[in-house]
Image (cartoon, rainbow, N blue to C red; front, top):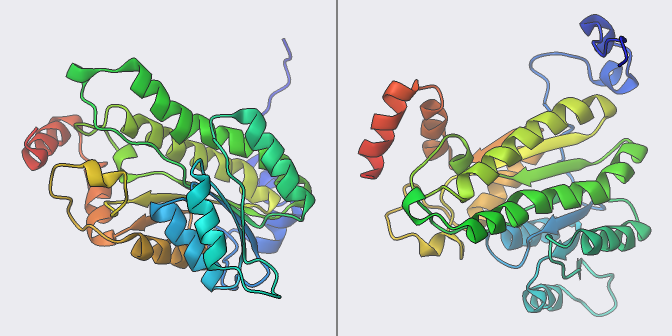
Length: 290
C-alpha cells in the first residue's frame, strides 16, 4: 500500500493549472464558460424524441447550432430531420437512433459522430419515469429506471469524456430533477436515479472545471411531457417543454452550474432541502396528502 498522500495543497491546486490561471477564482465569475453564440457549435442531445429533449434540439437548431439527436424512437428523429432539411444547404440536424442502455452502441455512435468533428456540448436528456411506492415495489422497474436515467448517462460519459479531456474544451449537461433533491412519495424508482445524476454532475464539475471543461446539472420542476402525462395529481407551476428549453439555454448563456426552473417552484423545493427530518417528513406528508 502506497504511503504517498493524494492531498494537494489548496493554494497550489488553484494556481498551477493554466485554465485556472486564465479564469481566476472570483466568487462572482460564472461557473462555466458562457455559451451565447450557438452558430458553429456542435451539440449532441441524447433523448431528443419528445419533451424537453426535443424542444431543446429545436431551440438549438433555431439558434444556428449543428445538432446531433439520439433516442430509441427513430421515427421521431427522422421527422425532426425532415422538418429542418433544406435543399442545397448543409443539414442542421442529424439523427443517430440509439438505446442508451447499450454501451457498445453508445460507444460506436460517439466514435462515428466524433469522426465528423468535435462536440461542443453533450446534453443527457434520456429519461424513464413510473410512479412507485414501497408497497408496490417492482425490482424490474427499479432496474429500468437505473439503466436509463443513470447508467445510460455513464455510457455516454465513457464515450465522450476522453475526447473532451484531450481537447480541453466542451460542456457536459445532465438533466436531473427536483425529485432528486430529497425523498418524495411515489418517487421510489425515479428520485434516487436523479439524486445520483446530481451528485455525479457535482463531482464531474470538481474534476473537469480545472481542465477547462464546462459541466452543468439541470433540475426541472413539472414540465408537460409524455412522462408527466401519467401523473394523476395537479402539478404546480407546470410549464411547456419550450419554456424549459429556453430556461436551459439561458442557463448555459449565464455560465450556470445549477439550472433550475420554473424558479417560482424550484426555489421552494430547494428550501425543503434545508429542513431537518423532524420538519421535512411532516411537511411533505401535509403538502402531498400521502
